[in-house]
Length: 118
Image (tube, rainbow, N blue to C red; front, top):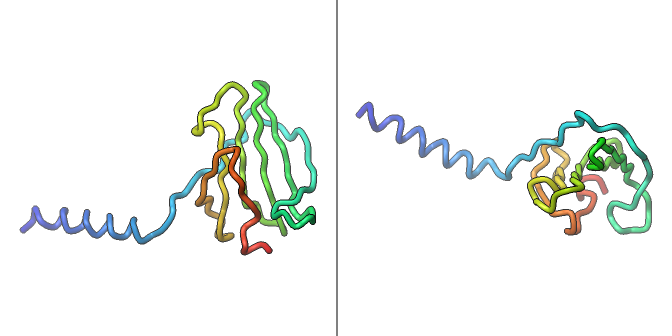
């Protein structure tokens, strides 16, 4: 019976994880990066520049972008100069404004301001 308890707990944890929802992606570390430029941009394709875009650069030529709308940071993008790897080049997005980056895109995919910020 005692050997059955860990198995039951493991099955319960797996069920919880599956129902807990989407993955979580950590924002990139800013170590070695400095603000390079800032501008307003159209994050939802409606012709209005509602998104503040801040670009960071490091000495290797890699760039990070943060996207903020209505005071809420909703996306990070990392573009490494010397790599085509999706692990090193990606966009992460907070899809529901809960502060958790739960979606990931390649750099050539479309992504927009989450509905919760419109």
